[in-house]
Length: 264
Image (tube, rainbow, N blue to C red; front, side, top):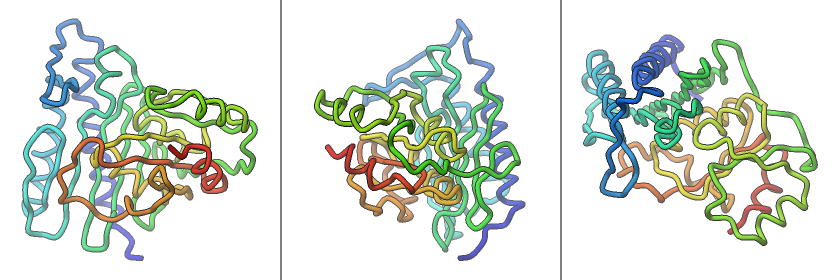
């Protein structure tokens, strides 16, 4: 394994935190304007401003790197490295004044997934990881939970809109306690050992990309909902299309059991 440069990791963390600070200008602001994209999902001036800031910071420091983001067209690079930006993960939460939204940033290089960042500006938390360096919560090392029993474990999801009654009953009967700490916040909780698992049936690449670094570096396991590991491949040049990916992140000790419980 080729360890990522720690100075680069710290620089990227600073960029994500700067983007988060920028979004706070619009958080709970009555003048926030909410538009709809072609797919019906919301977008705000905060999303656009945060992505523009991150692109400008990356371009100024690494003009040859590729950049893919949710709100602007992809920039093709020549360096062999590619950044992925989700300026606000949880825009629906953001527009409702819910402080669990985050800013996501990811880097892949010639060796694969390299840096993953979940910045939670309202909560004052940043979960981040660099390949070979481990995972951190606000500069302190963090790891997944060591619970090895489903009974009493915590499972989170972004929502129950794709759950069937049979699936809900099967999961609750097995003992996990269900919560809906959604979007990237749920994965931050897994990486820092506060819950045991997080599941999303539908994700875009910019939603999941940082997790391919954060969850393994925290000692956990990340797979698609069916247990396959194909999502861990570098996909920094794909379209990022919403709905292509699914995910289960866990502490690893309970991963196979959660995959079995959550099979569609």
